[in-house]
Amino acid sequence: MRRYAPAIGTAILVLLAAVGCGREKEVAVARVNNSAITQRDLWRALETERDGQAGRTTLDRLIVQELIRQDAKERGIEVTRPELARRIDALKDYRLAYSGKDFDAWLKETGQTEDDIASRISLQMLTAKLVLDDNDRQQYFEARKAELAELPHNNESVIFRHIVVATKDEADAVRRELSAGEASAADFAKLAETRSLDPVTRARGGMAGWMIKGKSDDPELEKVLFSLKEGEISQPIPVNLPEAPELEGQAKPEGAASPQQLPQWWQIVKIERSIPPHEIAYEDNEDVIEEWMLGEAQYQMQLQEFWNSLRAKANIEILAPRYESLAEAYRAGREARERRTAAPSTGAPMPQQAPEGSPTPP
Image 1 (cartoon, rainbow, N blue to C red):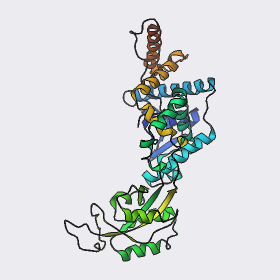
Image 2: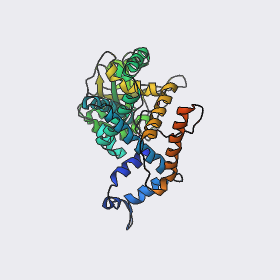
Image 3: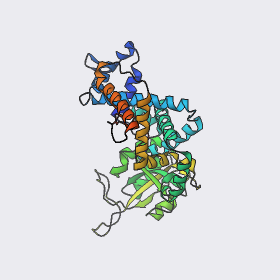
Image 4: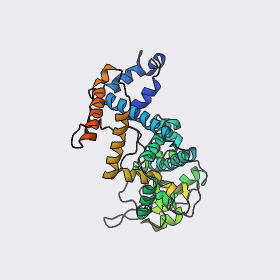
């Protein structure tokens, strides 16, 4: 499932929101020896990125975001607190599974706040509510249940970390170091970063991700994982890795290794999140449905026309000379729309950038 990744456009939006007064523009964001780099400096650099295209694109996105909010208000469409909370909760599980960091740590690492995320998600939800018909979404959900059934959050599943070592004795020692199964997620992650021999998960604090019950190719590991409670740490479990990790001075793995036989390593696992069996619910999959629908050609055209119609009927004034080319594009778009009303075969397109924070294809 797609979740939300920051991009350069997002960074500009945050800066534009933060520099509302002259004093704030002079806030230093970095210092090089005795010279400060200010928010104004960073703003100007981002604004002129790609010969000014980044600034023009971002201004267009900000305008369309405001038009979306105004249109939703006029039509009495809103995002409720429970709806928004459900989306953010779903995001938390996926951020944990793919980054190895809890939500607060991920926000800190990416320089965002929960309000930033809430604002972006609420805009996505408003856009979908304005563009997609509720009955169409419900029918789409019913038609795609088989595919939705493949997603981890729609199954009995677990999110887990592991630490891989070379011998059972070392696994026992690691478990003792973790207070015999009572360590916090942070303690487990820290030890995984320094002790685990799995190079893939080590950098994520041992985060191995999701396992869906009944869909694993390792039935022994699955049996252990689904016998544990959230926060519980397993006894040592044998594991065969597809590629032998670098030992870096560690003891050799137990058992004879040959080209036909993978060496046996040992791991201990910790359950971070346990999702019990449940029915696939429409409310738990609205974000997926929106993204899948808006990834299809007919809805992409519908979404683009919606953005263009908002631009065309609005009174938009571009006040900064730097963005005169964007103003000209708006004028051309309005004229084209008027011509299409009389003769559908004519017309020039409005600006084609999708507003940051709007639903995008998966």
